[in-house]
Image: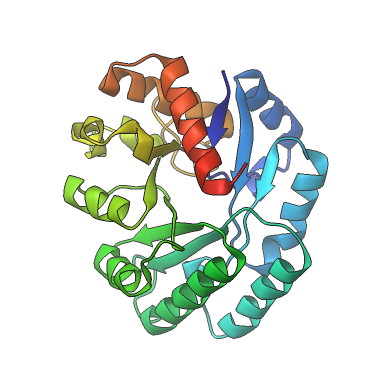
Length: 255
């Protein structure tokens, strides 16, 4: 059984003291595929080193995170495009809109989001969407950009059933992580109404640890707790859900 963590920040300094051991715990727990989202240029070197250290397991994305869309965002987008020209990445991500931390940058967040969608189409790559308090704004952009060449993952999906269906209508899978195990997470109330063919697993480690680790550092091995919750909600075996969600990830990332 192979489990895929489709979104994990393994280069985070939260793992600096035990990265190799943390990675081995995940691999020993059948988590064999790790997809690594970008944030901005300050993390690029650490991402490339992670890939070098774990070449059989680590697959990198490239992109500019919406909370890193600041005054220098055009320089950052140039960095993204420069790297895309130089080497292989498996997605453009994580990209999108975040209105939780800073609403004043909405216009340039939208501009950066659209620009990176165009890069994804140019390089025939999926996008991995970060959406925080911005479903309407994200959907408005996707309405304009939708087509057979637009596909990817709605990372850390926490919306309503209606929003889930709308996200899927844009050729997006739903990235389901630790929130599905939370009492107030709400997605556990309807997720079984979404066919498994639309679901991928993720941790977003070191953030959003599932129960019983909530509030502590998350790590990729804990994606098993997400899997266990989906077994409960869907009434299917761990192996079946792990297989389906890993195949879904292969369809998105091309490997």
